[in-house]
Image 1 (cartoon, rainbow, N blue to C red):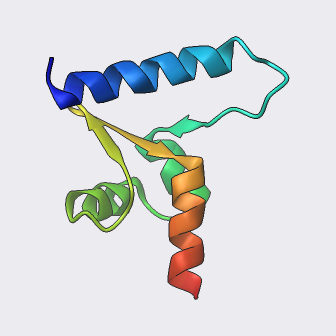
Image 2: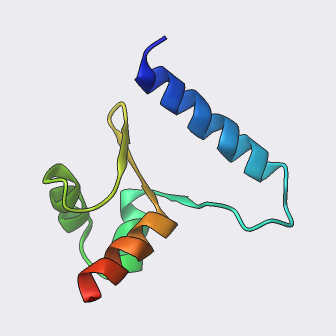
Length: 80
């Protein structure tokens, strides 16, 4: 099994575990539209930053996913 498949399986397993634990804070996977709203920028800007590797993201096929925690850490690092 490839490391990509292992990574996908691990992410899916973690997301399922978090979904089963409603009292715990969940890691929120965000779409490009949600990230655009979160950052206050246009959706095209999000895709541009992701394409250049400037913003943390995960590509699953054609879909881009973003972690709210990773984005907040990225923003904190840019503000420092």
